[in-house]
Image (cartoon, rainbow, N blue to C red):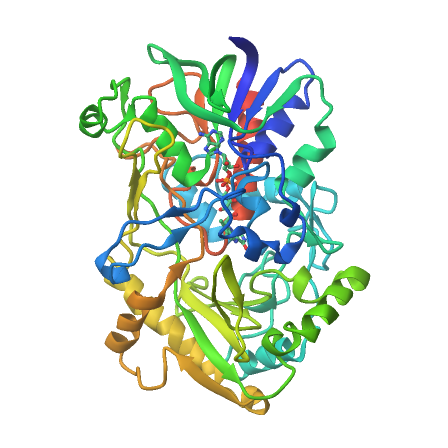
Length: 532
Ligand SMILES: Cc1cc2nc3c(=O)[nH]c(=O)nc-3n(C[C@H](O)[C@H](O)[C@H](O)COP(=O)(O)OP(=O)(O)OC[C@H]3O[C@@H](n4cnc5c(N)ncnc54)[C@H](O)[C@@H]3O)c2cc1C
């Protein structure tokens, strides 16, 4: 049994931040447990996400249960499993969401989470190298964020085409307003990935009061009545225990955090009893309220040569791209997953955008070890509602911590989500067929021009859509009966235990979830230190 002040479980987007900020005070002895390895060679190169999305060395490789609205398909649920967590394998788009997202959390009763309260943490995390207003941007935080200009002709054409259908160019969607089309801001600088492992852990590896233990799987929380006193974990199959004199912070992410609570006897009593797990604390919301983006990828053939990476990133083109990366740190290898995106309103009268379109300048196909560039030249455009109403759940199916939990998304269970998805696809069609795209010789491949009614479009979505890897909400923050943590991220009914990661989001933010998860880590650390 080893003694610490704080134990952080999971070194991902949020957990690495918590460990950094808590150990900044040399009086705090901190243990950071990470189930995965210290690093992976592909995690520093941006295009490495294509090499890691299917890679068991750095990825939990979960899959969802078959559902009617996925036509029985099991969807891949990749999650990073190494220092940096999913920030070390993700698509690198840097998107905060809207002020309204956080104001909604505050209106739900979560004091201290309105946009004006979380903005200082968004600023604190970043060194933004784009332009924009200092009222919204940080210039000296750990994560370097860049905003590459639209170098490729395709991006300039898309910005013009969007303008032709009423979507204005807004270079800074993380600034005063989200609306409009923009080049993606990226957690990439100097052609390298800015994961939380690199930005928050590498600089502090030598702190004597921080112990980072990799390949260490947390298997259960140690509870003394209703107080959490430490963690039981294993390293290479050898069982260990560590004690936290002050607090344990669970930052295992939206799949693993509820899993660890359930394995520890915190959750729905009947479910736990059925698996032979002693109920230590009844908390019905654990694993509920799962939300994610169900995102169809529309596909477009491009007839004009040399415009997409299908033409310029294969064969000799790939050699050119490698040289461009080596000398300029630009091009396909330095690419954010969807380099250009648009935040759009589905109808007039809305306060803020509710739909997201994101373009990838190539078509991909399934290869033996993951996605690969297709021969056919084209563009992929995903299009989906940003704040879906459909909710699912994640629950363990065994008392064995190595068995993956069952993931049920319940996608499109809300008719509003289906209606908005069809609307997003229609807007993608409008942009791709606008006059500015004519010189590129664009032909719709999927869903296909013959699918015209909402029913036909949604039928295609059910058979084709995947997530954009943004599960949140399974240890929801709030004060209602389904809430798992309070507004200070303390687990209801248990002392000495907090959850700090994407699982605490009561609703899905309007966009990607890495930056909000880092913000949660920053804010959690402040609250832990303030409550000491
Ligand atoms: C393929 C992919 C692409 C994505 N693209 C983008 C994007 O472009 N932009 C964006 O903003 N977001 C993106 N996301 C989402 C974003 O990265 C995540 O929302 C965010 O990283 C979640 O942070 P987290 O701290 O909640 O969890 P994670 O970062 O997943 O961290 C959890 C950590 O806990 C560890 N852990 C879990 N269980 C245990 C245990 N029992 N014991 C010890 N350690 C444990 C895990 O190994 C992991 O390191 C993407 C995600 C994926 C997977």
